[in-house]
Length: 230
Image (cartoon, rainbow, N blue to C red):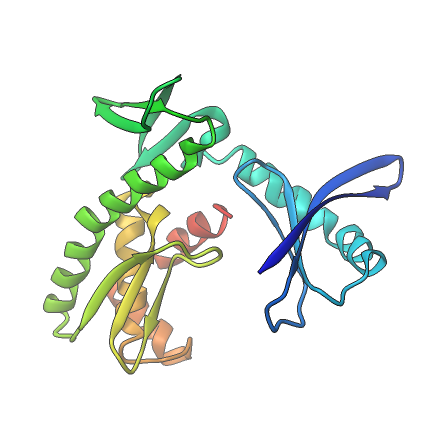
């Protein structure tokens, strides 16, 4: 359970708005992010005072500005500009409102959204990308695992906030971020190789990166592309 408060802090001569989310979960940390509406969201425990949260926003603001710039100018996933890519190919989003049910249709390089409410846009795009990730990336993963003679017991899709995928080393489960499908196939292939190596190495040891480099020599290029997304 959480409470959301609209708040403001003064930084120099600028008033910075942010959404303060007080979580009742057992957490002692405070974090800040940029949401899909390009607004600052700060999450904190219930006991955190506004003074402490304001101070955190002030200290975090340079990094938040950078993330906001990257997000607003993101060429792969930019709902503010109604642009999204699938396998590196750009699709333009066209919206019509006032429908009894929100739905979509992909025609060529267009995604036509018929929405009941404007707020449904993000959910429909998430649904599209999730389906594409399941259709494209999950079979790619199983095929690559077969080539490398590695056992994968389960692959799936998740809405991970700050990672492109994660692997459960012992259970041999791999889950991918639903947005991963926006990238070119070679970038996706790197993420797949990265996670498959975690079936052998649970951490990012020198040995881990040695084997990643063997199966994906250009991995440093792809890591930079992925890092610049968030």
